[in-house]
Length: 459
Ligand SMILES: Cc1cc2nc3c(=O)[nH]c(=O)nc-3n(C[C@H](O)[C@H](O)[C@H](O)COP(=O)(O)OP(=O)(O)OC[C@H]3O[C@@H](n4cnc5c(N)ncnc54)[C@H](O)[C@@H]3O)c2cc1C
Image (cartoon, rainbow, N blue to C red; front, side, top):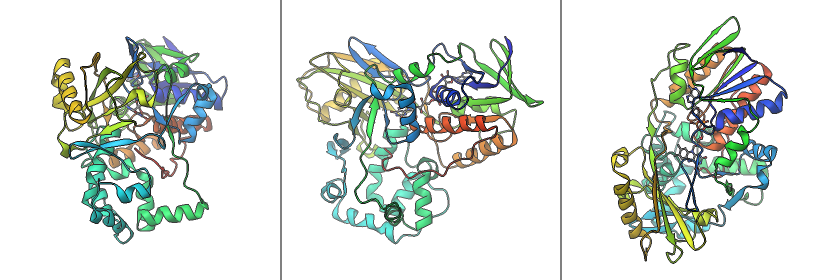
């Protein structure tokens, strides 16, 4: 295979597939090729179906509060198939002193929640007077400085639920860049939010977003995007080089050339390919690996109504939390059964992944049984161990890596980077970045990085 194209995309995960989608939309008929090293498209997006239990190896859903993702759903017709679980309707729980407590969903619930003491609640207002610290900080340092130490278990739960990460290591600038900008501009996050609302003239609070998935699971998204695309599975990019206005990609099946190259890979898969172009500040970023533990019960087991729960580290529990999958998305278990998916491992407990499946199942069941009355044993149990981890955007590496990446794109015309861990880790982040790089290729130059938005819901 020695070929020339207009665009080469490396990576057939959600990022590469979405970039191909937006590029086709902007330049119909463009000659692009999509290289996927594995045997199937989709990357981390992979659904599991056994004995009528439908679960996920990777992402379980995404919030419908980002324009680019809504556009993708509308373009593909998937908006008509999507299952929606509205955040406003479902409770989310946090493990607090050994029991499940509902997270407050509005200011009134915040006033009455037992998750914070009266003094802790008052301390939240300290944000109005406390000056921002400009230096890079961890999510934990930042939250304690602005809102007081009592919020830390809640911040911990949020970082666990999104990154399977450690809130003392994740960088606030990387995880919530829009919030950080607002804090620095207004001197206080609460004041910044109030000013923003005033400027927008918003009278009523905005609608709470919904979590989206599909009746067949999340793989429906990537399968739909892959259909009809010029995708080469089993073709791994081994090296990239640039000369005479052409990008050359050496693959396991020969050489390809194109004036534009999109590297749509997780940070740790992209770095070895990019290093010969410009040495990066770090060799790799830390990743959090997890096991997803599926437990099916008869519906005589009463699972609390809601999305699920998260457990901060100080609760000292085996599982990081669990999703109440059949509440979120009905149809994930046979009739008369319910499905719970618990997460084990993460940035802080990789040692738990060295346990056998039986040990992980037993540990998770014992843990869950202390939080939810399990009146009978499970009728289904399975441990899914995704091969890849979640890249961690941590203090000390993320800022340097972001600067280097920007420089790398600017000094190499035709090179565009997106993917897992560069501009975020969620599906919405991937789709947004994919649209940005597609616009850059269509325009013939790297598209400028947009100002990070302040999202109404992060976790
Ligand atoms: C366990 C887990 C749970 C998650 N849960 C959620 C969630 O609930 N909600 C949410 O929004 N997000 C979640 N995410 C994140 C979400 O899955 C990612 O944002 C998204 O899938 C990343 O897509 P990607 O294409 O950038 O990377 P990937 O999905 O990793 O795809 C990259 C692809 O590139 C291929 N590849 C690698 N190297 C090469 C090479 N040299 N040549 C050719 N091909 C190559 C790989 O085989 C892979 O298919 C989760 C992720 C994980 C791992």
